[in-house]
Image 1: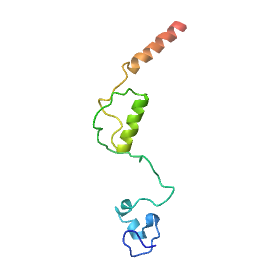
Image 2 (image 1 turned 30 degrees about the horizontal axis):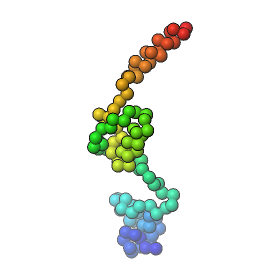
Image 3 (image 1 turned 45 degrees about the horizontal axis):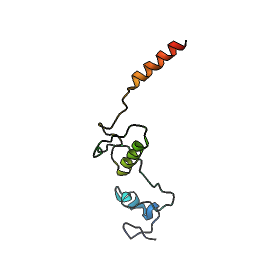
Length: 106
C-alpha cells in the first residue's frame, strides 16, 4: 500500500504513512489512526479551553450536573463556568459543625 499522504513510497508507519510523512510535523495529525485499538470517544485534553456558552443551574453532584459536564467535555470547552451553581453551605461551616458534634460526644 502506498503512503496516504505522498502516494509515492510504500507505507511502513502507522496511519498508512511512509517514514518521512509520518515524522513531518503536522502531517500525522491529518490522518486518523486506522488501528482498531485507537482511542475513541471524548478526547483527553490538557490545555487552555474556552468558556462554555452559558452557566448551569444544576447543583454539584446531581445527575443534571454530570450530564452538563459530559456535554461540555464532548464539545471541548471548559468543564467549569465561573457562574455555575454552587452549594449553599460552604465547606468550612460543615467542618465546624462536625467538630462541635465531636465535642458533645466526648
